Structure formats: C-alpha cells, structure tokens
Length: 234
Image 1 (cartoon, one colour):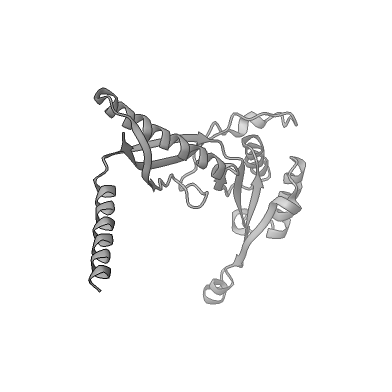
Image 2 (cartoon, rainbow, N blue to C red):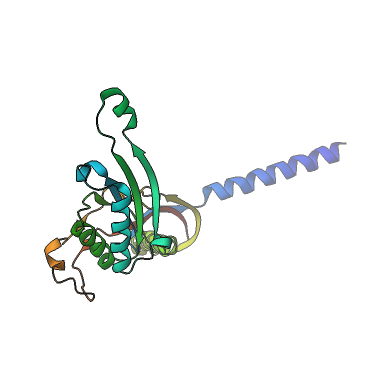
C-alpha cells in the first residue's frame, strides 16, 4: 500500500512539473493586420415604381412593361435577374380619406459591373423612372480573398516579433496561440451601409451607343484581418 501511495505521489509531482514547464516557457505576443480593396461583381439595384409619380397617367403595369423592355434592350435577362420585392397600394387611405388609389411595386435588378449599372440608371431615367438606387453590393471571391488576407496578417505579426528579438540574438519559434479579431467593414452580410457611386451623369448616355462605356465608379469593398499571436522564444 505504501509503495502504491509513493508511486502516485511521484507521478503527481512529475505531472505538476511538466505543467509548470509549459507555463514558464518564454514567448512574445504581437499583433498583425492586413487589408485590401476589391471591386464589387454583384450589384443589386432597387427600382420603385409608384403610380403617384406619374399622377395617375400610367399604371404600375404599364411602367413595369416599359421597364422590362428597357432593361432587355440594354442586355439584361429579366427572367433571371429581375425580381419583385413587394407590391402595395394606398387602398386603406382611400377608404378613410376618399383619395385616389395609387399602387406601387418594388423590384431588384442584379448586374455584374459598373458599366451595366450606369446603363440601368440612365435607361430608366429616360422612360421617367427615377426612384432607382443601389441597395447591395458583393464580390463572389470575398471569402477566398479573406483567407489570403489572414495569411498576410499572420506574417505581419511574425515579422513584428522578429524585429523585437533580432537585436537580442534570439529567434522566433512556433506559434502557441492565435487569436483572430473580426473587422467588420461597411457591410451587412455583403451589403454596404452606404454605397458611393462616382461619375454618374445622364448626359454621357445621350448618343445611346451600344458600345457605351461608363465612367461610373463604386466605392470598393474593404476586406480586413486582424490577429494576435504568441510565439515561443528560442
């Protein structure tokens, strides 16, 4: 019995000693950041058709037909890239106030580049549809790019650590802990809180050339990574 007790005590002391050794290892902790800007390649344009904008001279159905014809004329597949968000009317207000009944419909148009975006804005303006705005932008390669940015952030952290220990004639060992801090840009699951569009003008589309190239420019999406790393010292 005494032999077993002694053996148990020795094992406990050895285990405690190993634990202390892992804690007592010298390390350096540094942080690293990296970011890049990417151009959106999926752009959602919101269009709101309201009968009251035309003072009852055109119905929503007539405006919808004109919009579809215009979109198809500039090369947009409306069956695939045009969707209805909602439709409504002021029928309740009509009951209460005896005003005219006006219907409205909201649509989303999906395009993939700034040139087509400009054509949509200008084309719809030509047929009197002005309630048009960018509602969401995205880049389909964003997740892949984020992985590359993570690697650059880690490398920056390592280079910072090396700059500290080199004058001491020490070396950086393996990383023993990595913490990633999510940096949220101006986006909500791929969407921008504020989309900045530069260079838009209806005048530049006056000749209606099919080879028209716009000078419209989107605010680029910022992809960032921030890490904190503990490196062993050798």
